[in-house]
Length: 132
Image (cartoon, rainbow, N blue to C red; front, side, top):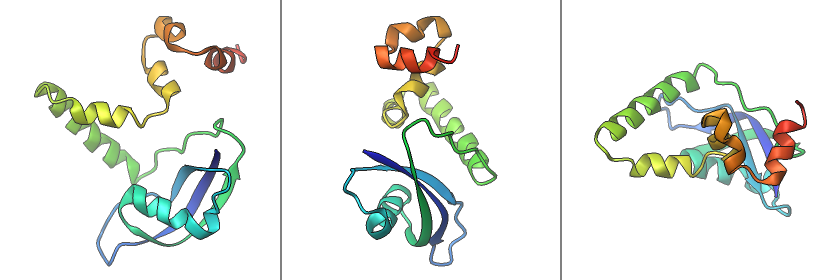
């Protein structure tokens, strides 16, 4: 698998006012040609067509998470509101589905630190603790 940072994304919104990212990370098979089919992946993820974008290969999954910018902050706030509402109503199916798409290490690090080792693989432990 390879990771690519797609940036300067020009979305085709048909004139609709939509808050969309201008940068995303995608993971694809090694033989995947991002220049030919990357727009399809971005479109599938966000539900809008892509006119154009630039990209760089990211060596491995150690890339820095994208900073939350002005378009994402209200989105994150809104999603948190929906999660709270779902939990209040004991309807956590959608929350469960959302969490399944989060990187495993992010889920582990959300837990209290004294539980991390219980959930980590040996490889994850080496990665996390090698800098300490």
